[in-house]
Structure formats: structure tokens, C-alpha cells
Length: 253
Image 1: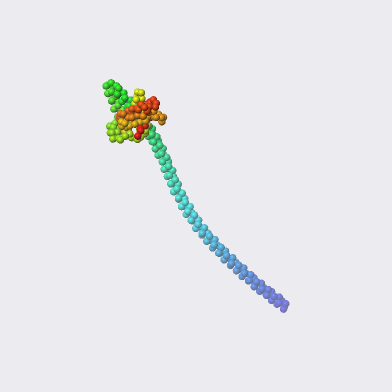
Image 2: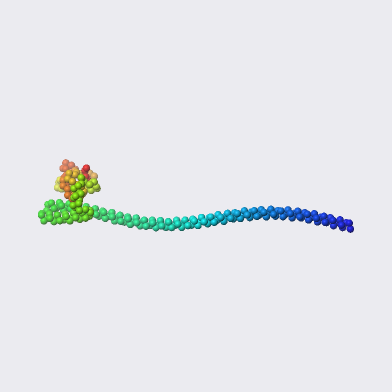
């Protein structure tokens, strides 16, 4: 009986010790679990903060993307408008080039017509000086008609040209006075008729050098001036070669 009681006591003590051990073990495990839970909660809070920051950044990026898309649309609209303007400007430039080419061609034709009229007028005036009275009268009518046509082309009247020449102090500095053409060469190179006149400011006494291909052929002095042509007497001692129609007369200051 005593042995049984002793065994039971020992078993009770062992059970009590085991219970204490397990209680201590459970306490330690519970504490570890609490620490792990706290750590996981801290980690979850950190992840939540990171997620919130990421969402905020994502919203900012979306807003920037929206703004960029809007700016891109505006840029495309401006580029389209600029391209349209460039096309329009190119068309206007092409039109202006065409108009300028037409104007240049018209001016060349006009100058050619003026030169032809001047030569015809000079020839008619010369013919009028040696014809009979009837021919002279007919030449006068032709001269008047030619002067009228010349005035219409140049936009001035012979009277206005004569008036402007009357108040001119000397030749108008221009390509014409620097390189006038010889229309007619007199007998034995005694005189020449130049395609210059009162409208260019030419007056009696003006001096002109006659050249061809840059080579001096003779010196001359204006002796008579009409509206559209002038007669120049050649200085015999200055003649260095035979003169001909088309030679160049340059004004000598």
C-alpha cells in the first residue's frame, strides 16, 4: 500500500513538473507568436504605406500622361496648321514666281517694242528730210503716230518728254546714256544718229565715245537733239575704225 502511495506521489510530482514545463513552454511560444504578430503588423503597415505612396505616384503619372497627351494633341494641331500654312505659302510663292516671270517677259517685250519704235522713228525722220512735200507730209503723220505709240508704251506723251528735257541740266544717268546704240551712220563716218533724245536729257554739246566690244572707235559731239534721237558729229581726228549700226555710244561727263 505504501509503495502504491509512493508511486502515485511520484507520478503526481512528475505530472506537476510536466504541467509546469508545458506551461512555461506555452508561455514562451505565446510570447514569440506575439512578437511575430507585431512584426508582421509593422511590416503590413509599411507595405500599406508603400502601396499608398505607389498609388499616389501612379495618380501623378496618370495626370502627367493626360497632360502630355493633351499637349501632344495641341502640338499636332499646330503642326497641321503650320503644314497648311507652308502649303499655302508655297502656292503663293509659285504664283508670285509665275507672275514675276510673266512680268519680266512682258518688260522684255515692251523694251524690244520701244527699241523697234525708236529705230523706226529715227529712220522715218531721216527719210522725211530728203523726200518730196507729199512724202514729207506722210512721214510727218507716220512720225506723229509712232511718237504717240511710243508715248503710250512708255506712259508719257512727247510733249511731256520735251518739257522734262527742257528743264534737265544734262543726260539722265542710266543704262541708255551709258550704252546707247548707234541707229544710223552718216556718209564717210561724218555723223551718227543715236537712239537717245530729249527724253533722256540729251542736249547739244554733250560728248559721247563710240565703242565696239569695249574698243574705242571715235569721239562725237551732239549737234542736234530731237524727242527720241540725237545727231552726233564725229571728230575726224578721233576715228580709229569704220563705224556701223549697233555700235555703243557712252556719255562722257
